[in-house]
Amino acid sequence: MLKTIFVLLSVILKNLKIVLRSPSSLLLLVVGPLILILLVGFALGGDKVHDINIGVVSKSPDTENIGAITSTLASEEVNIIIYQKLENCIFNLKLDNVQVCALFSDDFKISRKDTAAGKITFYYDNTRYNLAAYLIEYIKSKIEITSEQITLEATTNILNNIEDAVGFMKEARATIDNFIEDIIKMRNDLAEAKISLEKIKKEMDPVYEEALVLQQAYNENQQDINSSVTQLHDKKEILTTSINVLNYQIEIVKKNLNSTFLSPKIKAIIETTPTISGLIDTDNMSETFEQLELAQKEMNDLKVLMEDYDALVQKTNNELGGKINATVTMLEEMKTFIDTSIQKTDENIIILNNALIELNQIKEKLDENIAKFSGIDESQAKSLIKPINSKFEGLKDLSKLNLVFPVILVFIIMFISILLSNINVLNEINSQSYFRNFLVPVREYIFVIGMFITNMIVIMFQVGILLLMANLKFNIEIRDVFLPLVLIIILITSIFTLLGMAIAYFVKNKQTSILVGTFTAMALFLFSDIIFPPEVMPKLAAFFAKLNPLVVGEQIIRKLIYHNILLEHLTRELAILVVFLILMIILVAIAAKINKERS
Image (cartoon, rainbow, N blue to C red; front, side):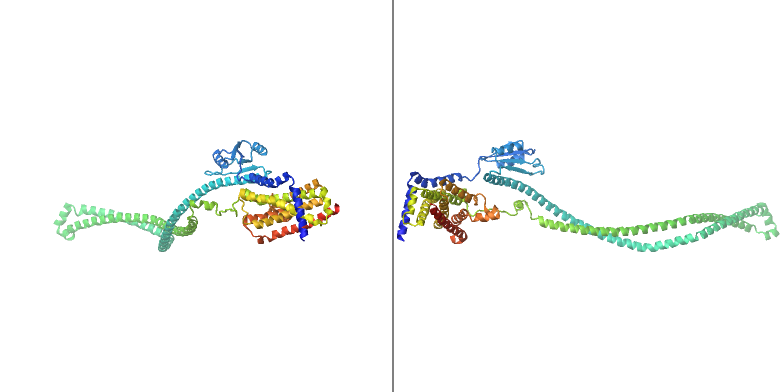
């Protein structure tokens, strides 16, 4: 056992002498990792874009708002270039004279009065994948800030309008309350008026019925009445004639009396003749004369009265039918008016009731809207335009170099391990002294293990320089996880070292073997998550990419350095690496045996 260990150490020392016998090789062992880590730090030290030109194309007349937006895009490292045509800007974009072309829509700002609005189309060269991601993020951040400011102003104006609308709704509600009170009063007044109209109708209906009866009776007896009036007129004429005849006779009697008995001569003869004076009393004759005159006067008065009465009867008879008809017509019109008024009153009461229902519904809607919007003011504008405030926080505040360090570390380990182990094995198996390995009484696996350990020593020395520079120069903290980190690095280095040795044993030609090793490393690199994460790959490709030792090693180192995850929580990843290590050991054993048989 001790002899085997001694022989193994001798093989390792021999291999180290061969590797380190050249000053250039020794220099590269130390300077190479330093140059690599310094180049990585130099290339990835910046976090901001610079030397960016943005082309702006616009035909919109609203130069003020467009200028305000383009000014937000401009900075010390970002320049704005104005183009008249989109084709010119696109051509310069293809020539890399500008990195982005911004096309403002023709109707930009026209759609609103107080705030900018419109469409901005950004053209970028998506063939420059990594730069495109930075540019999109930069422009989005600037446009979102400007858009948020514009939206905030517009929302504040809207909220002010809503606040005014709430005040107006409160005033409208008070007005509606007054309307409701007035309508209720009007409805009550109409109801009282209806009661009064119904009372009048109730009192007037009998009068109207009696008037109809009177009219009917008058119409039925009108002929008799006219006949009676005619008879009365005829009798008046007869009586008038009789009075005229009587007056005439009285005049004759008066004349005879006056000329016979009342003349002074005859009166003297009568008074002087006792016989005649005893028969005729002249005083009575005078009295009789006076009575005749009185009778004549009364008959004349009676005649006048009869004329007046006849005229009155004629007039009354002529006017009575018209007045009865006019009275009936007036009562009928009054009845119709009252019925219509009652009907209109009912309709108006129904209209007022419907108006009350609608006003109460409007009042309820106003109450709902007032309750809904009364708590809104301009201070809530931000919460309205961003009801959900999202904030993205990384688990660690890391620089770009810190983020890519696990990838760079595993990538460097892979290339150095595959190429260095491949070259060392090729140098040995193609050297003139290699034949002596078959002559000495030492088993072949001792030389293979010795070569593996030699490669591991050289590679771990270089990795150690990388880790030291990362900690001292770029403040990547590895002290807290140093032991598990070293264990994982040894495991990863072993896998890729064995892979490089297996390629050298399988392919003895130097140029071909180095090319195979290089292409294998490139395949592992391209089939990893360095360019595209497995989550965006096809599922089958993602499955194999997640088994890539480059990917698995990077994940373990990242979780160790930045999240301090214990190895006991990384059993799946460790199992994958252990399986690969076993496979590589088997592969190297098979390749070494084939090489021995071939040699």
